[in-house]
Structures are given as C-alpha cells and as structure tokens.
Amino acid sequence: MYDVIIIGAGPGGMTAALYASRADLNVLVIERGAPGGQLMNTADVENYPGFSTITGPDLAMKMYENSSNFGATHTYGNVTKVENTGLVKKVYCDDEVYEGKTVIIASGSDHRKIGVPGEEEYAGRGVSYCAVCDGAFFRDRHLYVIGGGDSAVEEGLYLTQFASKVTIVHRRDELRAQKIIQDRAFKNEKIDFMWHTVPVEFKGDDKKITSIDFKNVLTDEITSAEAEGVFVYIGLDPLSEPFKELGITNAEGWIETNEHMETAVPGIYAIGDVRDTVLRQIATAVGDGSIAGQEVYKYLTNLED
Ligand code: NAP
Image (cartoon, rainbow, N blue to C red; front, side, top):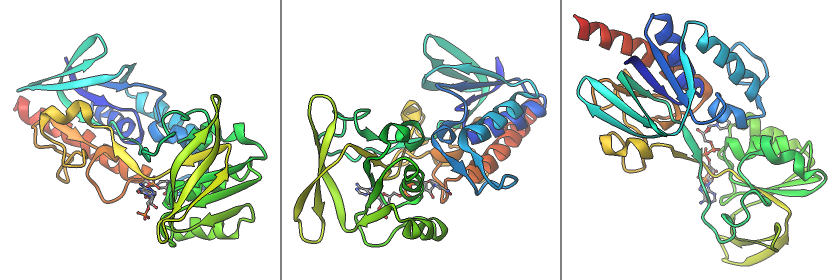
C-alpha cells in the first residue's frame, strides 16, 4: 500500500513526488513513457526560473533525478482506471492493480487533432504534432504549421533551422502567442503567414502527404498548396479518460479542483495540465505539484490522528 500514487511524470507529477517523498511518504510514480511529459516535445525552455535557456529533455532529466532523490519509486505503465473504495484507492495499470491511500492525477494533456480528412491517414507520414521529434526529417522543405498560439509560433521558429520556409496558418489575423514570441516570428525571414485560413484536407499518395487544401474562412475560397510536412498545434485536450467514472471532470474533460488541488473525491488530487486552470506552463505545473505533495501529507496526518 503506497501513501501516494502519482499518475504522470511531467513537471507537476515529478514535483509532487519530490515533495511527498521528502516528507517521508511512500511514493509510486506511474508514467507511460519517458519522464518529462510535454517537456520531451519541447525544444527550448526560456521561461522557467533558474535557467536562462534549457532544452525540454534536459530539464526533464534534471527533474527526474531530483524527484527520485528522496526515495520515490518510478514505474512504467498505462493507467486505465482509478477506483475509490473509501480510504483505499485502486489504480488499474496494465495487468497490475496498485493500492494507495491517496492519488495525485498528473496525466497532462495531448495535442488536439484538427479532424480533417487525411489527418489520421498521414500522421507520421508528413503530418506531425512534434517539431522536436520530426523537424530534422524536413531539411530544406517548405513546412506548414497550423495554429496561432505559443506552441505553433514557438515550434514554427524551431522548424526554421531545418526548413527552407515555414508558413504559419492561422484562422484569424491576430496571433494568440506571447508578444515576445510573435515578434521573433515576424522578424524571421523564413516565416510567412496565411491569415483567416484553415486546412480542410491533407492529401497524398500511398506513402506521404503531397498537398494541403486550405479554406479562407472569410471568403470560403479553397486553394491547394504542395506540402511535404505539416505540424498541427491547435491546442490541448485533457488526458482524463481513465478518471471520468470518478465524476471529477468538467464538460470538456478537464479535472476540477480547489486551490488545495483537491478534487471532489477525498484523497484524490489533480495537478498540472489536466487540471481546469487559467495557465498551463511548466512553472504552474510545478506550483500545483508542490501544493499537492504537501496536501497529501496533511491529509494522511489527519487520517492517522
Ligand atoms: P492554445 O494557446 O490553445 O492555442 C491554440 C491555437 O490554435 C489558437 O491560436 C487557436 O486559434 C488555434 N485553433 C484552435 N482550434 C483550431 C482549429 N480547429 N482550427 C484552426 N486553428 C485552431 O494552444 P497551444 O499553443 O498548444 O498552447 C497550449 C498551452 O501551453 C497554452 O496555455 C500556452 O500558453 C502554453 N504554452 C506555453 C509556452 C511558453 O510559455 N513558452 C509554449 C507552448 C505552450 P484562436 O487564436 O483563434 O483561438
């Protein structure tokens, strides 16, 4: 029986593991891939205090080492369900069932799919959601990036080191990204923009994508452009399916908590990107994780009393 089972080893989960294990709790962290979460898909981080610039994977490795220093156990697995049986929480993970007195959900979010024909068919064959993973495959190509937020513009900038040109395709004529990132993109000679435009179909042959059909949302005019690579960055969806039966998610699937990171189920907490929150950053996930790590300690101490 663990004192706390943490589901997800992104910045939030790893911080919760650090705080809880440093408070001498018996901690299990379950992660379905390499520790780091979205950090593993992030090229450069320059808004996490203490590092003027650090790559996402480097920061992930530092957080992982730090989270293990006080004895937290890390394991791999895919959590499919959490059951609340009063004081014991059961976490179903592949063929195992782990039992914990508390659970911290730090499962994060996934890149939203745009849902146009050809997207699924050409995923991994020209359609990508990860510039860090796939950018180098597109040397000297003209690439398209869909979206106007921080991810689209930042990753578009990252892609300019490989691509001959990067076209950012946005459905409005104003970017949502932070101004400092926008300014860099506007100054970058390799970047241009298609405003008021969305993709309506990714087309290709039996091997890879060869063109994209775009629609101008003001005029409904459809145009086609040759394309060998497109990166979709149109926002995030919560990874909360395994927790739906607990009744702690809102209509969009984000998990609702109070400022103590408590969900509606006593002993179950949620932190980081999967939480219904106003800002999704490494720093906010880390803040959530520290609160939850401390709160489980208080909850368990109260139970003992
Ligand atoms: P986001 O901020 O939600 O932006 C999504 C973008 O995609 C918006 O520009 C949106 O257009 C567009 N979009 C949404 N649905 C679309 C559709 N169906 N078709 C076409 N375009 C669509 O998502 P994100 O950029 O992935 O960022 C997610 C979170 O991570 C944000 O909180 C962001 O601040 C944070 N983040 C921070 C950093 C950083 O601090 N350096 C880096 C990356 C991400 P509209 O603008 O018209 O809504």
